[in-house]
Image 1 (spheres, rainbow, N blue to C red):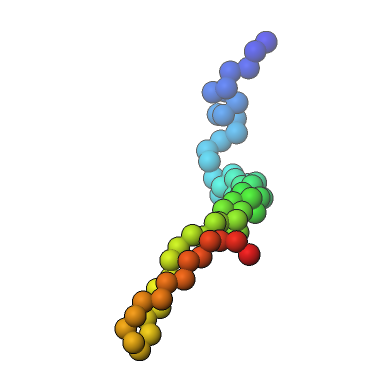
Image 2: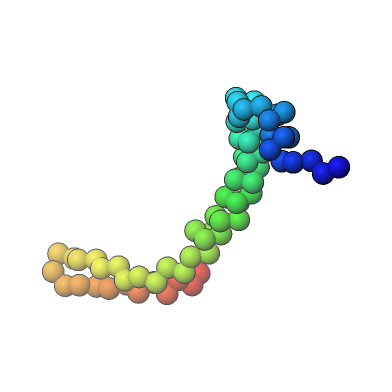
Amino acid sequence: MPTKVDGVLEQLGPFGPYQFWQQIYTGVPSFVAALHFLIIVFHFVDVRHRSVVYYATSTCTCFHNTGSM
């Protein structure tokens, strides 16, 4: 005999604090794992910019950063 989903949900009862904390506890490991893999975005960034340093002679000396070590 197939069970209807609505009947099962009625037996479980309303969404309460226990269900809320269960959702939080099961979501935290996934969130931490996602942060671990997304930090690569900041570690492997290839910075190519131009820094301008002005000296007392008011001439511009430009340093080009190619992003290589």
